Image 1: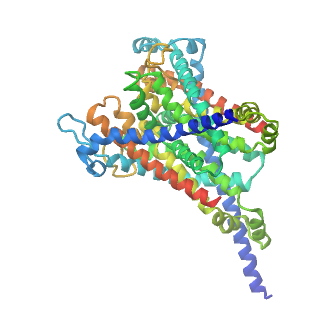
Image 2: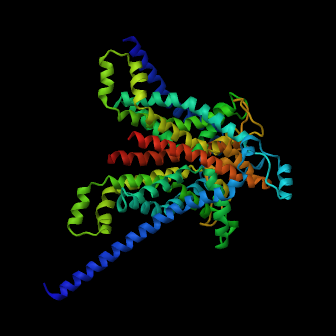
Image 3: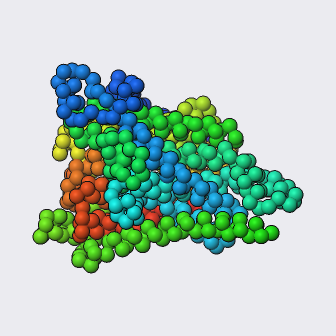
Length: 295
Length: 283
């Protein structure tokens, strides 16, 4: 090979390796930029929110604007807390889970038991589409289905219904996926012993797939926990702690929205957001731990 | 034997609930939207005049349809280089390493942040920065909303394309390496062509998610009922106009907002079905 051709080849190789290295650096740099927001957001929430967190914050209801203004002008921290939001969120999320979990798990079992059937495919596709429906649309739906005809006004029940429709497709999907991983032989062993079908489901399928089901359920809950938009159209919000499902109810995200719109209360948004995010992330991490342990 | 039949019937009946819910959603939205479409016909979709003043009521959803599509497209364009880099980081360059684990966890965390917290962060942290950079309208508008939206869809786009990239068979990559290809050449000549339709589907699904995002957008887009005339103009999306104007809505206005909800439902449904269809065709 002539020296000139050789030189062209080595030069070519040089630019190729250079390009390769440059691209790798670009990928690393952009990846670091990608995770920058999460670091900045968590830092901001902790830096601004931690000083408000106390027992009062969890146990008391929010002050009115005037109390907050007085505290502000005196340079004190704003009194009161978000107890009505915490109880409201718990009430609505629990109610939504009670509606969505049984239906979702049973639907998942149906899909697992009838693979390839037309109806099962239809249900799977519809469930996928339902998962993509924007939460605000589900708020409109719960308004039309519950607020107007059933509770005659904004209510925790309506909020729960919108949240349960959000959770439902996630639970269906995770149930089916988890069941698919169970060895067929376990089920067949039970059936061979003459165990009735419902007992196979209750004593074999659900216990063996329990941790997988739990993961899906926890992820579903963590997804609806921070939802604001559908609750604005359904639960509306309330200044008192309310456990009556037919009455307007507050929730942590709703309170954040109220504080955001009230200049005197702005100090409370960071601590409320911190608490909300801590709840969501705890559920998230818990579900991933459970998923990792069973794999 | 009989109990088995009952069990099967219960399974079937419970699974039908989800069909009833989905059908009911479509039915209720259509029913609620009828007054608006009766009054304005197709002009509801193509008119850019949204005026709730009594006596002069006129509702046209075009500004919100335009606002939704523009913010989502811009968000997708911003998130594309970031999420694609992150998925190369996770699925190729540092696959299986501790670094990838940490980065992957951080990206996942982004998905756990509630929309309203993104809105707050955009309002108090990002907006002042953008104002300093000379953005008009006190930093509100399409651009600000799109940046936040881009951050919000990063985790979905990243996890979907990472999954697709890791599915590219090792033999294909090894064949290219054995011919002396550099990693970059393997990525551009093997990984991207093999995984292309899956990656596209992942971005279509992320786009579908961006379309329906509500709270963060409502807090940042500036809420004006006009067709945005530029990247820095204020506007409204279909989701944000529902959140904004629902409070005082009755009669024709309520119907118009439900009609906007119906359009949003249909658009996101079509986009999601398209993404899922491409993914299914691949598998």
